[in-house]
Length: 80
Image 1 (tube, one colour):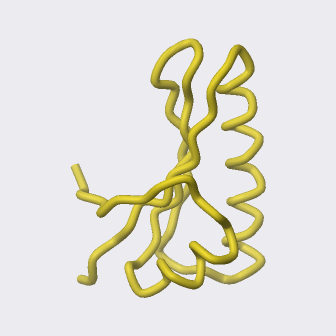
Image 2 (cartoon, rainbow, N blue to C red):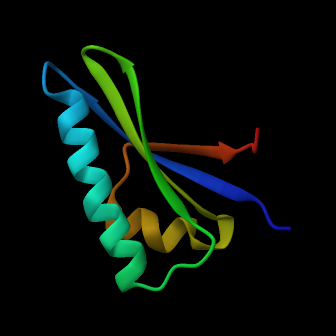
């Protein structure tokens, strides 16, 4: 199995979680439209003022997706 990457978008402020959830909708539409296999999108509320949305993809897709989607940051994804 190849390595996976977690592309992350950070949202801060009183509406952070709502914005993160909305961003996740668009990312899910993108992976369907682009037919990206073995990927998934999640949101996580870190605190009442900070949430993230992340997209897990195969490492081979990192560079093209980083150019198209402009994530704030990324890291290797380690399955739990």
